[in-house]
Image 1 (cartoon, rainbow, N blue to C red):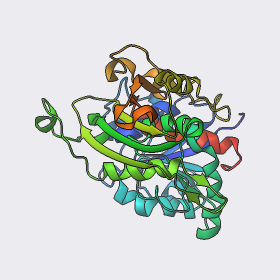
Image 2 (image 1 turned 30 degrees about the vertical axis):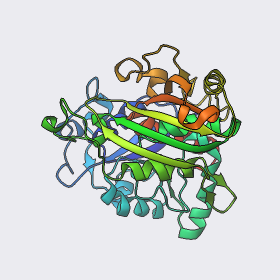
Image 3 (image 1 turned 45 degrees about the vertical axis):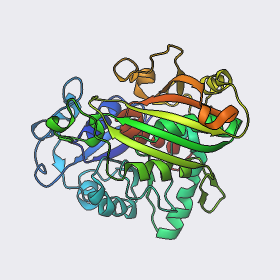
Length: 358
């Protein structure tokens, strides 16, 4: 496109904020016009305030940008042509800041969980439920906003939801039991203290099981023109923090609507595609990559599949708990790319294509 959309990045100094900067460098559709941060960093140069935690160095395009207050009046005074904001804000700050930006006419693509389950807020993985973005018009009408809020999912949900979409469409899903092995970066920085996590597994992540169980059903639900009717299958989750840097794994046990062979399940997953987003800049060529090796996927070896945007599946095999209707497999998702910043950028690309981001 000839003219790029000018965007703000809210909460630019954290791990997810850094991923946004990485993804938005040289992006064909978007250009960073403003960066915001907490009070302690406000007024500083980005390179001075950030503790850069991901690969590479601070990009020179943003190194000298001044960090602004996370306030729409401040951002729009500095960059009046900002039309969208990518939010990497903590939940308690997002609760107030994101509606303020939406009220000011900015379309917010949020990583926070605060509004994900709101009835008028689209919760979107483009390959799973692109049509749910049409809920945005109802949100604007109900709240009187010219902007809006569109959420991407909890970082753990991306893999399960992406794999359940084609299985639900092809066979029907009745019940899901899943166990997550979640990377340290999912807790942000400084996250879990090293003395708690090294040589250890922590079998509790606050609110994570509830998010996985609720968000998956909203994502795979049906938009009836007014609201999202959640999918009717049952889902039970156990969530664990493990000493891996990036990459959330989820062990999935799925009861389908009828008898099925594991090789048929693997083929359905391998063939999954979404033509509506296939050629968008951040969309991977293969949304789901199926590995046939008995010991894959592995975070260190597979998390960057599709530029970190593909879900990697392996160990597809029968699930005896569900008899002939059962299948089990592993999923792997890069939690700060597909599960966070990359998911939001892909959502923005989708809304721009559909004319909902102007």
